[in-house]
Image 1 (cartoon, rainbow, N blue to C red):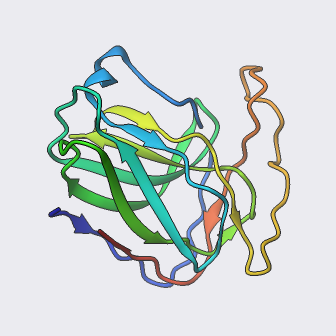
Image 2 (image 1 turned 90 degrees about the horizontal axis):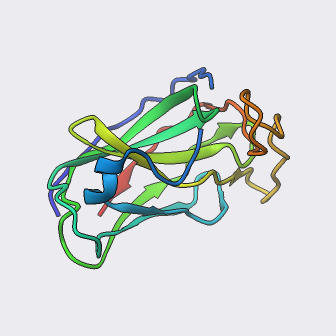
Length: 162
């Protein structure tokens, strides 16, 4: 698997306002992201996607996101150039960053050439003791009963590997 993984300096990033499990009709040819389990900050976080569907994403991007469904914010580009065409389940190991708040308000966005996004559902990154808080908002701005919030990466660098 050949791809480029971005590095993040220990720089606090602020972000704003995600997430349905799928996107446009054309994303049917894309990968199917799997939602990770709650992971503690600084611990391994396995990013996975199912490629058993008929798809053609030979070079995809994976981004760490937060926000409401209609106002998503990229926190970090995890990887670019990931081959999503091999049969079976794709995997990428990533170190969960230190975030604020420690709540189920984070998700991954998968795209191909910046188009046809598809997402995991929201998941939590717990603090070092394993604690999480409830998402700040219980409904989306447009009224859907989907909890969300806006998070940020605080300090420490992040990395990924295949």
